Length: 208
Length: 237
Image (tube, rainbow over all chains, first blue to last red; front, top):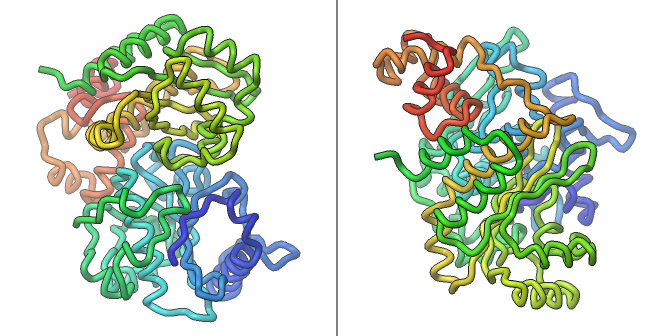
């Protein structure tokens, strides 16, 4: 299922939490070689994980982490404004309709396009439901082709010498039929809205 | 004629004191024809501030009983940042049900929508619209007004922070040269595509710069943002 979990809810789910932060260490520290901090538990965590972000997580049937990303509102502290303002022409981006999306991670155990598509489908549904116009975040340029294949690619907003790009995902530019096809199902089957207290029938289906 | 949201932000711009903020909250209640509007903030020093339309006797009782400990709205919204319909909250605890019964007796409506706000340096505030009506009517209301209510909640919070000038003071929300360029080109009558081409950025990047500038200026829409930037001399067209 695709879960919508704030940081403080994760503490009640140690298996999901631990596998997610370990998978992030594998992806960002080991595989991509980013200068991220891995703690004594083998968890890749930063200060933004400590301010209660909203995670979109594909949880495998055994309860473990399959893939995830992390949302924070740009009205509060976000990585892009705190650390990458040089990449956005000095613009500190702030709006309740723009959230930062970071740490897109797929578990090496079950890495598949399907998992990636499911995480993106969750992010798309969440953003549309809460009336966002854009998500933005730094991403690895190698991912661009994959996002395209999945049906929701970022527009390159800026690129830095550090081989890190700032991407913009528009909630108006989602190829929903393709994203659903890649995810192997539609939102009604995959999204666990009751994490946020919704009854599924309350949710208006997505339209492109 | 100016739209409703333009009216609201124009009026918000003129607020200078906490008393005026209180009157604005009362005006919002009448404008949206709901029972209550509540803005509640906690700054970094932990000092609370509220502007609201609940009966003073209910507010006193709430504070006296320290109901913030059990109020599902507070518990369910604190440190969140997505809009929350009260139906999504957990009212199952006996203490929560007893609290709700008391609140309804005191004139609080059965429906609510709360927008939690995460401000600069982690400041937290909550904006709530409350009403008595059926689920269907409420769903119609929130669907129609959610965009406006999200914007109003944040602008109200910016204004409250500005007035209080406490540890969360917002420093004049400066616009970067890129944001000013974007507004200037639109003010000159260029389309978004033309302005993006001139600045050598994608149209989406331009849209994000404009959205960001609009928010910092407290404007209702792009046209309004250009007008405000011109009025306060930030751009010259």
